[in-house]
Length: 183
Picture 1 (cartoon, helix red, strand yellow):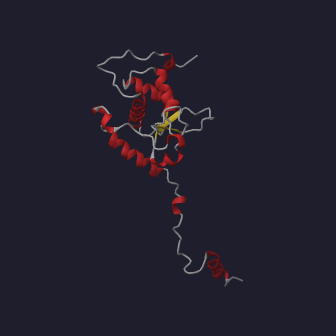
Picture 2: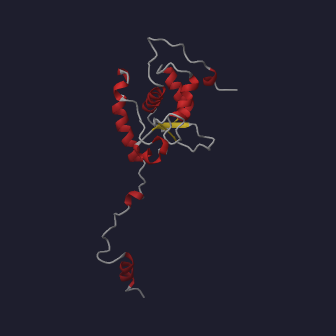
Picture 3: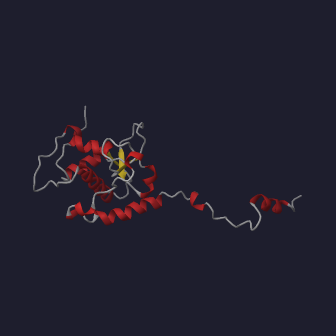
């Protein structure tokens, strides 16, 4: 038995309401709107993202198509199947039963982008965004970098801070000089 979302049909296309975004762009806008609305959350379920795309009328494509884009086609750290875009990042491994959550791609994710997807877009072409979503560009530029800064390991950030502490001698010689007066 599927979820309510899976059993629900896509809304009838209404030219006055539904935007004509590609599914990949619609998925990015949908998850960006979730991130902006729920700024304390770092990830969203596949179903939440699909619901955001549908409820905001971002595309008139079928639910199944939208869901596949959220699950695979737009996920930067998965092999290309066949879409190469890098709009989302899966926060868990594919074999993990909890592999159902995604977020936008941050600068810190770039080293973990699947080789099949290197160089692919991480966001829609800004000039193609509808006017009501133009502010997402500035939001994303700030979020993308902020997320990266928060993920720097504080211990690794200390690397090299003691350089020069021992003067001309190496660390072992320095420790031996300290121990010389011990009995």
